[in-house]
Length: 615
Image (cartoon, rainbow, N blue to C red; front, side, top):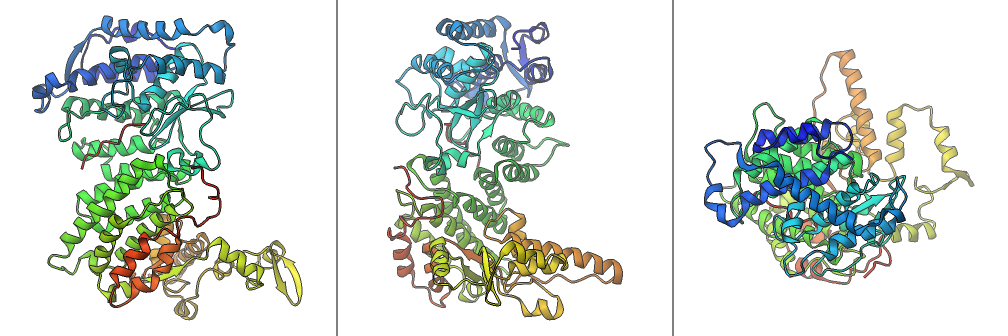
């Protein structure tokens, strides 16, 4: 374990942001592991000294020297560091534990040490409680702070296999030779429920957003440094940030970005994007690109199970009045939340979606409905389609859950928003209702799906043929034909495509469907996207041969696939010339669909602090 090395001591006293960056760079690039306790104490001391109430009048305006910080002497850090080591080592008898790998009992004992020394007379969601400075000087830690302190404590004891695991609103630890064991070390929710030492949610409980379907950010030691930097909170109050703290966080995140430690950390990329939007750095990747990188990270490493990358991007589009793009980002966020079952632990993401639905979207409607310019999103059917996709995801999130999501407070803004789109715009959206698993099973039982490609067997000349064998018989066809054939069971073929090769292979598809799939939208068939890819390859070959570019068709009839029971049953009402707003409201708030079972969602079991919004 790395400790106070001579090269680190030489950086003190710390007087400005560059000196902190040098300390972090030395720890990240030096031999051995970066020392989590040391770095948390340093940034925690700086953050708290600049955000305490007595200094508010100083922080609101920019300092004379933009990167200056209160002087931090080595002996101050050394005293806190030694105290933390003494607390951990004094409570744990290492004779009972053999290295190099931690046990569940050891992790539980370290968490006991941290947990039992916290004061109970404070609000755990207050700002600036995530660092070891807060622990050592006030016996206060938030959810993230407890988990981080446990990992730092295990590092002090010489166990390098204990690492931080982060969802979008919770933290726990992984440990063991293959990092395949998990343990709760803190709480989540309104009470201080003690689950420490237990395995994290699996199976049914893992289907809540809190555990991101077992796709958390499992940190390396360097990513744990990124986590402590990402957890820095520059806020002075609800409306002002401490300039120096924000600058420090931004510079440290760029250091970690340059060293490649944010590649698998979508939330940290989103935080950096927010900071760059506020104060962009010359020559750096723009914030818009950082938000895209966060989304790509979530898709590449976490099976697109994280919601916040899309809401970060949606918030950016909203603030820059790019409303069409904001609708698409929010719909993509809803496509992620549909993968989960809503539970009482999901309060933070519930509030996020509620704000989008009841504040941000209504504001957009108010702005766009004044003047009715030709560029208004109210005249774009793809915006209406994304609005439906947004609500469809929320309705599906509700299905199979013990607690309903939608109530009249959701229904009224939705009805008002839909009513802003003229009937001719709504009519241009091609709505497809996906079959539920129960409906598919019912049809299969009745023998109605004999020719469906999803069957294991197909009837052919009175005999049964395995699907795999039949696929082999068509494997010599052109790839475009193979992909087209595979997708025919899911879509209606477009006559213009068959006759002239124009547009989408399927009715109502156009480029919008391909675009949705490229953006990670699970509502679009992968088989269909494969057809588009093959079609594009054919176009490229044709253009090289004939030197005549193929004109792309404008998207005028986007396709949306509704998957939730509530939205599927609303299809006719949504497309009717005159909206029956009362019927829509009643149907949305009906609780009969809440208990509808979905594949993999049966038998539902009955912090990080709130992400600071910089809107």
